[in-house]
Image 1 (cartoon, rainbow, N blue to C red):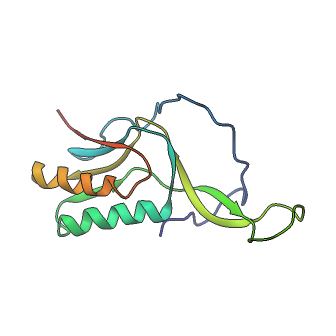
Image 2: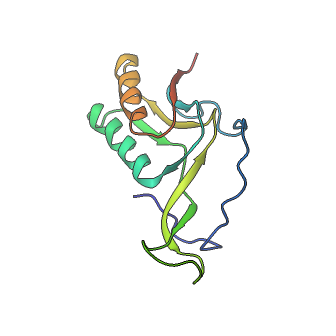
Image 3: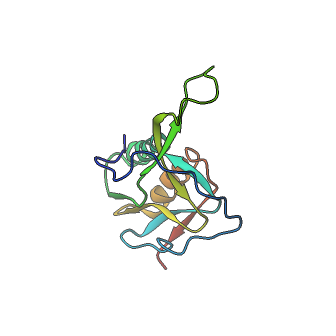
Amino acid sequence: MLLPKKVKHRKWQKGRSKKRTVETRGTTLSFGTFGLKAESAAWVNSRQIESARRTITNFVKREGKLWIRIFPDKPITMRPPEVTMGGGKGAVDHYVFPVKPGRVLFEVDGLKPKIAREALRLAGYKLPVKTRIIGKE
């Protein structure tokens, strides 16, 4: 699964919730002819990205090319269950990518339009965000 090889800071702070913010970077297709674009905001973890990637590659029978435009580098810490308050911050449990509306998550190229759209539609079910399929016009 996806996780960083090396990080500057092992544990991050959560950050404040910014309602109604939209993405300004990574909003257009850069590599492929079809893409999966986020319509809502959520944290997408490495397992969900891997599950969507496997769905796409399995459906297209490993033809064409796939680009993953997001990488989970935000560490999320967890305390063990039934541990009392105090004792510091928990250990890093998994990594996520904070997705905002407008971000392109996956791109595909070298496929027939019908197959590309169906593969991206199936991958969208594996993600915790609402998605839309976009094409290069």
